[in-house]
Image (tube, rainbow, N blue to C red; front, top):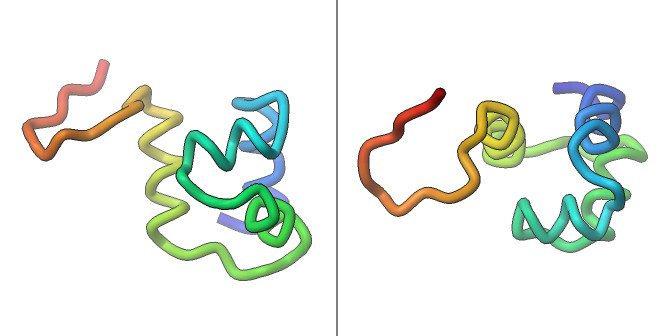
Length: 66
C-alpha cells in the first residue's frame, strides 16, 4: 500500500484522521505521517485490509468474512 493509497483508503472509510487512528489503535499524528510519506508497517496495511473486508474486532477465534 502506497502512501497515496493509504490516504485514499482513509478518506473512503473515515471522516477524519482521528477516527481512523482510533479504529486502527494508533495516534492521529501517525496517520498524518503515513499520508505525508512515512513507511506504512505491514501490520497497519493488514489492519486496513481487515477493515475493508468488514472485520472490526478480533478475539483470537475463527474469522468469518461476508
